[in-house]
Image (cartoon, rainbow, N blue to C red):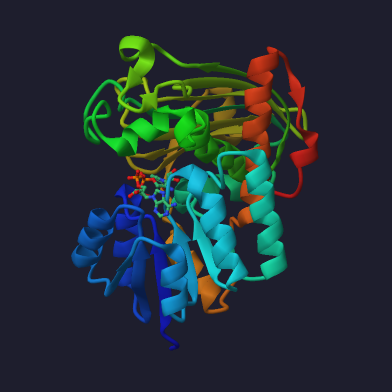
Length: 357
Ligand SMILES: NC(=O)c1ccc[n+]([C@@H]2O[C@H](COP(=O)([O-])OP(=O)(O)OC[C@H]3O[C@@H](n4cnc5c(N)ncnc54)[C@H](O)[C@@H]3O)[C@@H](O)[C@H]2O)c1
């Protein structure tokens, strides 16, 4: 088995998951890491047994022969880092969302196409066996015609320090500030729940009406260098390609939940409820004769390979790497339409993003 050499760009919280997963795979090694913060990258490399620490991407690229790079920086740095690596001919696994603007995400999709190398985005919750099973039954027609959906992604870290203290830690403060490249809860977890919805339903969104809310949370809504102006909560009314209507909601103020996704799908012949996240992965079904008594049954499902396994599998030429930049670019169009709809206060068409999901 050929040994694969990886570079990690960004060594904050999420990068630990990348390092742990890749360093534990046979024939895969993270040979170097880059972060703008010298102390952090050195500490990170020591923790994960990575030989080379850099504060400059160009220096890391010049010093090593690599197979792939993982971009795990804040959202606004995804585009420059990914594009640079693609231009070097490296396969790229980028964190979600693809970028912080529609324009830069389109540049990333275009560059990935030119490079012709493996490119993937980490939609973590594709690991859900419940989601996978739901999609299989949708494709088999077991729900009949889809009429309605409800999708939610609930967190409450603005009310509880379960992931650390958001008022003092940069890793949380940048997520609350547009000047630091955040598109708020919409870009941070909205991208996950939109991906979850269209992966489950197998259809794109053709129209939506979005309302964003930024709640007051500090004196003058400012802490140090951070203006806390990014949205915290979002509600989207949406329509899918076949006309199915539904609601998508996401928040960082949903007390009682740490990190939970839920998707309900209602067709003319049955309904499914997928829940995943901190409380485990579950599928409930109300199908066939059960629709007349509204009886729901728990279905057991097996977890799917995670993004890290699929990326390495793609690098070894076993299957295509998905979801790719093009898919994440389509989702970025939805994010952009959501912001636009909020500004204009009206329903917007987004059928140009609808394609095979
Ligand atoms: N897929 C998931 O489920 C999931 C979960 C959490 C975070 N994420 C994503 O991972 C990314 C990182 O999030 P995080 O929580 O680790 O943030 P973080 O703030 O903890 O870490 C980001 C790191 O990137 C470094 N950095 C900033 N600009 C850089 C640049 N130009 N080059 C190199 N390093 C740079 C920072 O110094 C910091 O160490 C975000 O895009 C986030 O949306 C994804």
